[in-house]
Image (cartoon, rainbow, N blue to C red; front, top):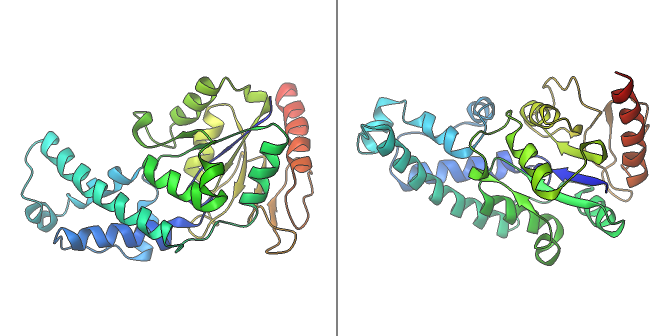
Length: 265
């Protein structure tokens, strides 16, 4: 059975700048911490997979560490970070529910079309599961989102670029890697998906356009919509030639052509 697995942040919605970053900074303010991340600083922090892992870096600042109660042991540090992260997740999901971050072009169209064609659709992300489910519901509606399997947060011990979350998704859903495509937006995500043996379409986001996407099967500015924002092709090594909006027929052709190249290689 053909399967389409989506990352969340930057893929379902361009959530990092307008969702996660404000939520992190609101959390710092809530806990009286002397830190605020700028747009540029947060862009660098995105190289670290996982929100708790990014939050943990704030404790490296002695002023933040003291304001957090001077946690002395790894367990105490982990407890502090977990408390911050719960608050941050609540703030983020409230922002998503308020419609602050719209879905990216083509996401609803492709997901509903894939499901109508009896494809398996899933989401695999390193973000907290409540955050992922909120973004998914905002992108396709709560009823449809409830039918889509989500693998997120601490469901695996290692975050992207480690392939663990994609390996789990394939295993739990019984997917055939040869019939599975991933949609990602970052190099870390691409490395995670290809590390699991999955071919990957990249739709670049605000923070990732200039990253290295060598190894992607197709690189686009977005999935595009016929009556909205058209896609721009940034890399098309298999000559799929999508125009205006990516269609299921393009993805089917991509599986066939890239699969042949994979077997020959």
